Image (tube, rainbow, N blue to C red; front, side, top):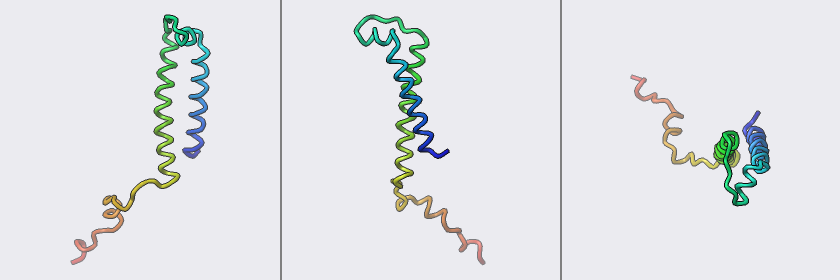
Length: 92
């Protein structure tokens, strides 16, 4: 499975987690300004969504870089030196 399909599946999972979290009565009360006692499940769900958002953003950045070839290969000295072998030192 390529990176595009993985990102799409992960994005759908994160959106469904956000939907589940927003429908939680504790979160709804907290958003309406009431004091809320968050359960461990609510806190864990919020942490998973935050981590998932970062993974999605970085995955999207990698996908864009690979898709549109946004790397700057001309200034990269490691690709130039590793492309040819040091044949002058081996011949005598």
